[in-house]
Image (cartoon, rainbow, N blue to C red; front, top):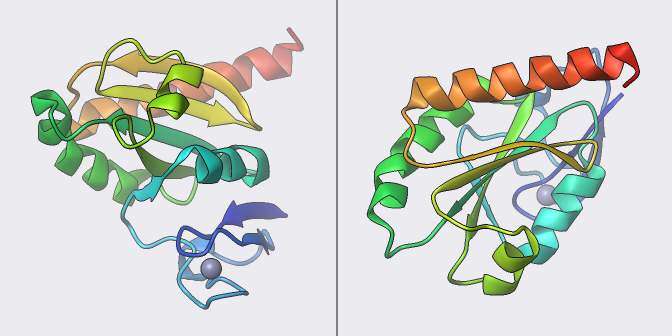
Length: 153
Ligand code: ZN
């Protein structure tokens, strides 16, 4: 059983393994659980995604409208969503709209990518990346985290 947070209404949805999450709809609002686009979050909804996403990772793009490299990376991050969903939920956090959230995440430079699994941060990076770089970095970080977990360390 996997578990996803609806990007539209924030409801926690359980998804049977036999069912493709990409075609699942939210039990509360009826919106698709995945729509091929990163979902905008604030500190509160990011916390819900981190805590309640099970059987998938959460990748957060911390950005700001004044940041040129952030704007340049936005279409790359959106394209990466289509390649990484539903194994990874892609989210966007506006550091200017929510400075408290980026302070809590100890963000020092943007654009920053933070990868969470089971609520824990497993990797982060910063700087402008291409779609291929985002996808490759995410998959490599997940593979390394999986290897660490199976070694029991
Ligand atoms: Zn919903």
